Length: 78
Image 1 (cartoon, rainbow, N blue to C red):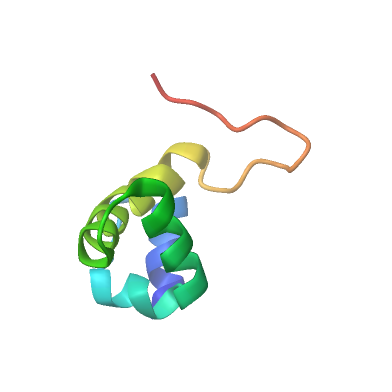
Image 2 (image 1 turned 90 degrees about the vertical axis):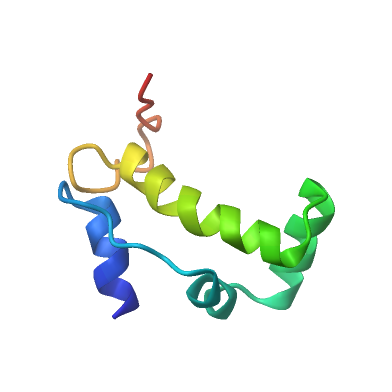
């Protein structure tokens, strides 16, 4: 189920939504604590923001429907 969501972000079609709960399950506590410290956001706000921006970010770096080779710079949309 999660892989289908990620595939939708990489592919050219619409992005499947990601819930804060799904994101919290995917990230470990150390990562979440580090992100909280770096952003100054509480856990709920951090997860809410990431759940909307992560699908968009993956979509932007995969304009051709696949991840670029590691040796190439990431594409940027203006």
